[in-house]
Length: 196
Image 1 (cartoon, rainbow, N blue to C red):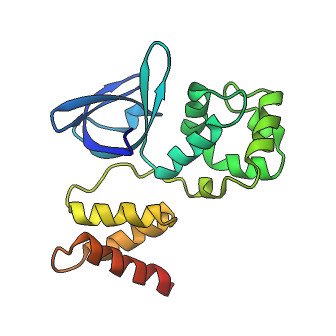
Image 2 (spheres, rainbow, N blue to C red; image 1 turned 30 degrees about the vertical axis):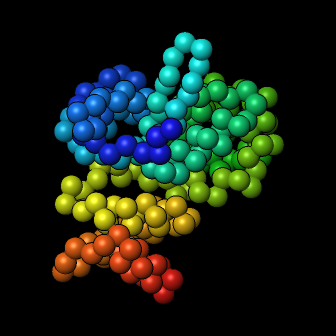
């Protein structure tokens, strides 16, 4: 329903934040909400979970966190709450390594993951977590970056480049003397990425 939301942190709650987007407040479940400050301009990639009693919008400051969350949802025995806790964990970056090495002991360190669930994670996700190692902790958008550059950044991410690679390119493109169109930023960004 929503691919992402750009807005300002209006309120911080124990389990998430309220993001103000053009006069509308979206309640988002986010990991570690206290890393944000009221007034921060942030982009959240979102996943809507629909149940019989409520609609819950989960927010992720890194696109790869969203991908990981959605992959975990496909594992038998893992629901949205468990998947969200795993993604928000400080050990999330180690998940890929644990899966590839059949490290059940490491996987059972995640809250709500027992031996059987750990085995299922390995079975379902082995070879499918390449992007997890590129999870980033940078979450606040630079308000000086114009919308065309942000759109170009999203396009590069959609093409499969990691957030780390794209952030380096964005820093270079930000130094342009004049504001370019999204297409021009994208073309220059691709040139930089393919030259490396």
